[in-house]
Amino acid sequence: EIVMTQSPATLSVSPGERATLSCRASQSVRSNLAWYQQKPGQAPRLLIYGASTRATGIPARFSGSGSGTEFTLTISSLQSEDFALYYCQQYNNWPPWTFGQGTKVEIK
Amino acid sequence: QVQLVESGGGVVQPGRSLRLSCAASGFTFSSYGMHWVRQAPGKGLEWVAVISYDGNNKYYVDSVKGRFSISRDNSKNTLYLQMSSLRAEDTAVYYCAKDPLIYSYGYGHVDYWGQGTLVTVSS
Image (cartoon, rainbow over all chains, first blue to last red; front, side, top):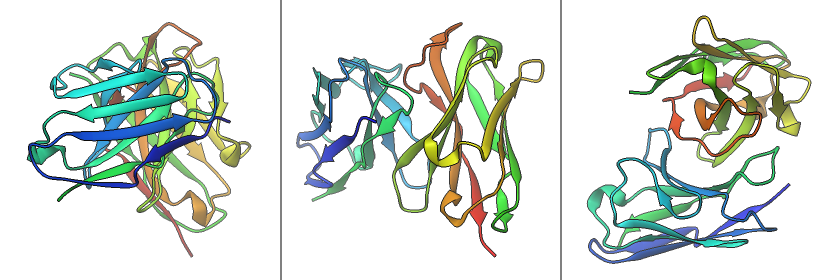
């Protein structure tokens, strides 16, 4: 099973600043990596797939990069609606599909 | 637009059974694999099971093998999760989720999620 590790657990950022979230895989997942956003009481929402492709309707301030074992989600200028939990997920080696433990982006 | 609506959650005693349903609309249900993903209270996401577009291919996370069964009725555009021998650690919100790959026994990420249904296993 591939273990996904996200860092940091919590990221405190001021509105308008850049946020950089990291995700590491225990072995290569090539570019088969997705990012999801989850707000309290809501279902997750797909942000990025293929490590760097934005899903439909996702603003350009969200970008993903990386391949192999190291991945990054960058939010270029945080808006109020971006304060949420973010999860990475690998879909290269399955079953099981595995998620990271999440990074909470909070207002500084 | 894609809609996934789960139902069937509730409070159930340990050892009992429960069946979750997910009604799909807004896409050709019979063409896509479907997943169940769960989230225990205050915890992260855990993939539970997947079924191929035609129902012939299924996978489960180890912790539910032999207890849970995923199925689908393409004539009703509905996905199911039959859960038996439920344990306290199965308490979670269960999400129905769509795979983006069409007519495939390979699977990808999740492109759409339902709103979830809460299952509480407690005596």
